[in-house]
Picture: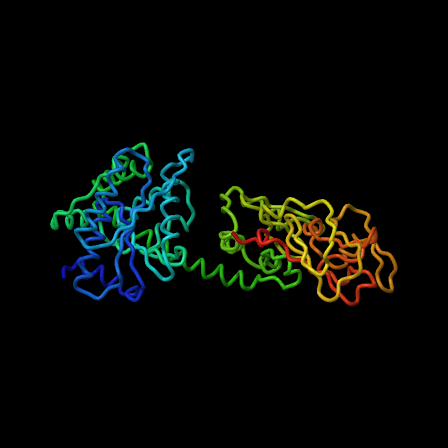
Length: 439
């Protein structure tokens, strides 16, 4: 076993118990070397079953011959191959990015639980990624480069060659007389990454011979720094977990006072972690919206609009409202079978706990001026009752109101906002799954 093979095997040992290893096999140099290495190791060691996946984009005429080439390579190595066609949105602003998205969506679909997808990105790719993201103005998370491993669907994505240079891969391929395909688009310097690969990195290495290795090492150090920031954000978010009041809204929220105890940079770090699974993160200039929301007067209702929703402030909390929460429902619905749950168009489901009241029953939404008969208090304005209950203002237009005839008798999920005749039942509302705030 060569030193190269030993290094690869050592890096893969933590995943030796996986149910299967799958190689992302384009047919190019890098993935051909990776597949050959793994197939060779499999003949020497007891390893998980190995298969290859070729994603067929059909973005250029020459690509039509690549599946046959990949099949021939896999047949020679005794590795099963799956060819997976995908459709790439040619109208996308970045065809390269759209192709990558389609490729990884295919991989995600095909990975079974605990399986490992191995991709062949190497040290030069990591250096190129760092330069590319630096010039795009990416933050620390972007400058951390490609991670060695990350979750992908039900399995794990692993990049075992990030410590290996392209020159080492080329030397291995020549030594073993491997054949691979050349993608013509890889030489087109119209693409930013190709420009960096063919024009910028070679020029840097003329002056600093170890430039590629140094850049890749910096990406690794930045990844470590990002890990520390992620751990700090997790601690800060745990401290800012809001009380469970109104948890039935299903909306992520944070305690504003806990966030305000942090410095500005630490606030941004925590909020990035909070927002990352919910929306596209704002650029640096757009963070002024957070300051405006945080520092607004106590009686204000500030809004910070983001790509996939909004942050609102209410009741000492910061709330995330996804885009599908924002349009308020309207109309009236007759509840003809109150012993059964009532689907509300675009607004979840209503049901009764206990014996439903006698009808005729109808569900409406707030128009303004509603009044409710409350035990011991007589008729009271609904607006005042909602204020007393502390219901966030942004949620009030969605609250289902239950009428018997023309009489308002209950507000969903608010027992204190129900008529005196409802002691035997409660009106329960489950907001729609699309409004849970989790993307």
